[in-house]
Image 1: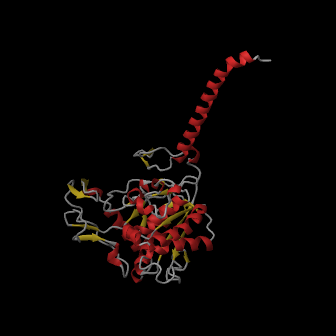
Image 2: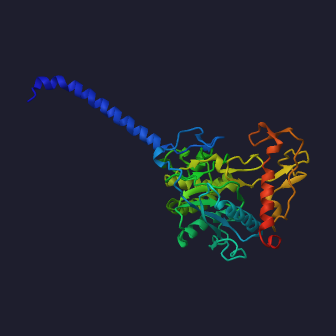
Image 3: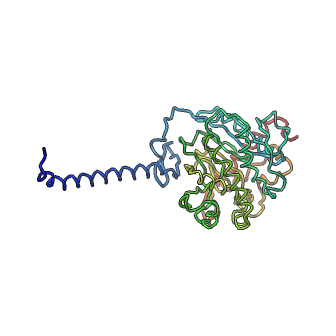
Length: 388
């Protein structure tokens, strides 16, 4: 039996031990929370193929997976039956088939989600599911507002074998075999420099109330490209649709977000469900701002590319040589498009990017050569190209 005297002497030691134990437990808890919330990383590959993280915190260890475990994903893109959409889908599907079975690829099945409401003449060429467009007039000329509604319908009416889905777009070309960049419940997305939730905080708060957390929980992304678990997308898609419609109905938001409104809607919808994304700068590249493929995976040819015959970029002004998908709204581009001018050998020119800072680039690394060659290969091998 312990005397009161001894108990009295022991109590300060006991208090110290309890304080130390509580501090240690609190430290471990905070460390675990921070470690498991550190999903907003810029994860890329170095020149030797190794992974490095730029610049935030490494991916949680508990969601890393062994390299020999394959997790196939289903490629899904939304499209219309307009000629402009169809020729892009044909090129995209051609390169999907070329890359699908290459080493390093984890591409699974493919679906074109056709939200025009009726079958078209590509049903036998490209695996397609037909869904309904929004009721007439609801999109108010903003056609991409149909995208979330298309995904809602597709997920409800289709059985997808793969556990993961890549949301892609018609103007994507796979330049390298694409692995599954998602990890467990953490989707992977490409960060867009022009999606800036923190700078649009006042508007974001209309749709993402303070009780959900800071505006920085809203990722600087759109829905594409995103690789995400199917069960997560099933939860997010209806919210994405509703947020898109509410944003479009709000004049201030519609004016502020413009043509990227639906992208902001996906980012907000994901945050409302507590879903944040691994941000992968190597997911996609976009000419003319990116100049070489490197180890990146998707080439997105959304911007017009104009050059003079010296090989100098004339962005914002129609050049002597140009490639712009909008030049082919009514029908497909012809076969054997001319390559961009090579410029003076070993010369360097100045290009002012959207930041306004002059940057020097080697003319021989211009990505446009790769883009045009890939378009030409596809159009040379797709049957009945010029009749589309």
